[in-house]
Amino acid sequence: MAPLSKGGTVAVTGSAGFIGGWVVRLLLDKGYRVRACVRDANDERKTGFLKAMPGHTSGRLTLHSADLNEAGCFDEIFKGCQGVAHLSHVSTYEDQDYVKMVCDHVINSVNMSETVSRVVVTSSVAAVMSEQDMQELVLRPVLDEDRYPDEQNPKRRADRGQGYSMGKVLAERTFSGAAASSGRWDAITCCPGDNIGPILSPHQKNFGPWQHHIESMLLGEYLQNVMGAYRPWFTVDVRDTAQAHVLLLESAKVENGQRYISWSTDTPKVEEVCASIDRLLPELGFAGAKLIDPLPPKIQAREAEFRAIWGGCELRNDLIRSTLGMEFRPLDDSIRDCVESLLSVAKVKPSLKPGV
Ligand SMILES: NC(=O)c1ccc[n+]([C@@H]2O[C@H](COP(=O)([O-])OP(=O)(O)OC[C@H]3O[C@@H](n4cnc5c(N)ncnc54)[C@H](OP(=O)(O)O)[C@@H]3O)[C@@H](O)[C@H]2O)c1
Image 1 (cartoon, rainbow, N blue to C red):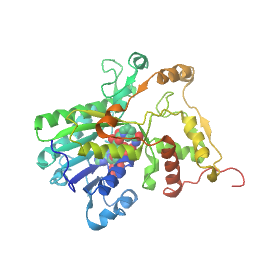
Image 2: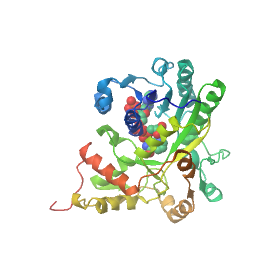
Image 3: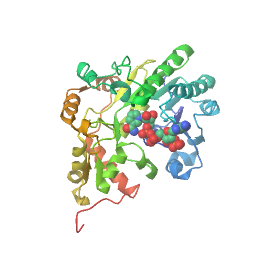
């Protein structure tokens, strides 16, 4: 399909979000016209940072209210766009019929637009590696674009915590199937790892969960894990993920149905992330934080086993690097910039050493 033309128009769903906000900003920096889709354009708390972007003053960036639960919500917004970056979450991942329905809402609007030639769909590494049975990671430890979770496992069900992973796989296939049927547009998937880096608006500190984890560290207490078991962070800078989206919109080398993992292949433990705050910003006087481990005793007993399984996995990002020429930022830069944005943008008050 034809890549974006210089100065062309791109609609971004989930523009008020952590990654979506950065995609909007990078598209503007590269000279595109951007239609930022949010649920409520009048919600200043979530949209103020978009309206403060210089492109909004000139009209190159416009904001549009759209709730993807409503059929037809993007019909008018997508008309005249060449690209769509679909970053929005959905209201729930527990109901796969609902996930399919909201995919169809977006797809119908793309089809009606008569102009969109490329859609980048934001999936997740959960659609690559979220396993109901951890032994599957021992059998298939290479985490690359060809890998999907074991979909034959009868316990792979939304009520066993797999709804997000299942919903993302479903969305990837629904979009690429619809694109193939249309013949006019293609759908390329981006699967990001655990995004950290600077927030652009105070409300973004509450989502994540990774930037929210770092906020908890700054406040003095943080959890071992929010994913239900021991696993390292599989980090990527939010600016790199945003760049991956823009490059996927632009690339003439990518093809319908392909997926690209966006992660640096760094795998820090949560304790290492916390310890690096004082190492990177000694001037701050950060007091450190207490690690809380809320995992049930039967999971705690398997800590060494889970850590060994993740340690045996091989994270790959050679496809995105070779196809798009991507380089990933060092983890330290992402942590430093995340912390500084939490302090300066969200006014987080960190726990400090006595006397600081
Ligand atoms: N953050 C990560 O580390 C990570 C990792 C892997 C994959 N991802 C994927 O990347 C995408 C963006 O993640 P994020 O962290 O940037 O999320 P986020 O900060 O929570 O933002 C997501 C946005 O989705 C929008 N949204 C939710 N329900 C909606 C609905 N019914 N209709 C329209 N918009 C709706 C919200 O819009 P409003 O604010 O306008 O209400 C919200 O701003 C998601 O698809 C997520 O699954 C994220």
